[in-house]
Length: 422
Ligand SMILES: *Cc1c(COP(=O)(O)O)cnc(C)c1O
Image (cartoon, rainbow, N blue to C red; front, side, top):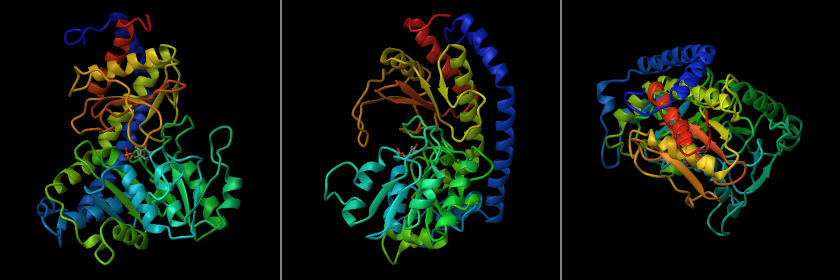
C-alpha cells in the first residue's frame, strides 16, 4: 500500500487485524454470491437471452426484445410473475412513486408498517410540501404510519389491527437516514404473515433499495406483492447508467406500467435506446458487485470499531443491506472521514465535499461521491445529513481491493487532520 499512498504503518497493522476478523463474514458473503450468481445465470439461460436482446429500439419502441426479455429475467430472479425494468425511471424514488400512484385510488388507505418512510417519500405522500402539488393526499388517499417498537422493530400487534382496512401495506427494507435496524427477509416475512392473516387483500409493497442480492431470498419469495428499487444501487451492478425496476404480481405491474407510460399502452412501448446491454450486463454482475460492497462495509465496520467508533450494523452482525452508518459524534470528525473517502474515489478524488441543500431532504447533506455513474451508491460513497448524531452512511465499493483502499484513505485523512491518533 505504502508504495502508492501514504498510509501509516500502524494503520496498516490495524487493517490487517480487522481483515483477519472478517474471515467468517467474508465466507458467508461468498456463499450468498455463489447462490445468487447461479440464480441470475439461470434466469438468463431459461429466458433465452440472445445477442439481439442486447440491442435497443428507437421511437415508440414496439417489440423491443431486450426490454421484454429483461423484464422476464428480473421477474424470475426476484421471484415475481412480471417486472418493469426501465431506464426511464429517474431514480429509486420514482419507482416508489409509480407503484403507489399506480395501485392506490381515492379513499384507499396506505399504511406504513415501519414508521416514517424514506425522506423523499414525504412530499409524494403529502406529509410535507405544498397542498395542490398532486400528492397522494391531494388525491384523497388516506395515510397512516405504525410507529416502531422501542427497539426499532415493527409492532406486529398494531400492524395486525390497523391493516384491516388498508389497501396497501408498505415496508421499507433499508433504514434510510434513520437509526433503526434494516430488516432482513425473515423480518419482512413476519410482517407479511401478520398483514395477510389480518387482511388477505392488502397489497404488500416493499421498498427493496440496497437489499437486492444481500441474502439468498428476496421479499417476493416470502409473499410480498411488489418490490421496487434503483438501478444505480445493487441490481444495476455499477454498469446501468440510470433506471429502476418494479417486480411482482402481473396485474399490479400492469397498473404500474399504465402509470409510467399511458393507459392502454403500458408495457408495450418505450424505446430502450442503447441501455439494454448495460442493464443486462449490470444485472449479471450484480451478485458479485454486491458481495464486494458487503465486504467493503464489513471491513469498514471492523476497522472503525477498533478505532472506537460505533456502527450500525455492528461488524459481524447479520446484514440486511449494503449500508453501514457510523457515528462520528461531531461535525468535524464526520466531515474529515467523508472528505477522506472522496480522496480514494477513482473519479474526482481531488475535490472537497461540502454540505448542500439537496432536493427532497430537510437538512443539509454532505456526500463523498466520486463515481463512474453520477450519484451511484453501489460505488463506494458516503453521505450524511448534517445533524445529530453525526452519522455517516457508508455504502458501496464495486471491488473489494479498491473499497478497502478507500476506507483506509478515509481513516488516514482523520489521522492527518488530527481527529484521531493511533
Ligand atoms: C436510496 C433509497 C431510496 C431511493 O432513493 P433515490 O435517490 O431516489 O434513488 C428509497 N428508499 C430507500 C430506503 C433508499 O435507501
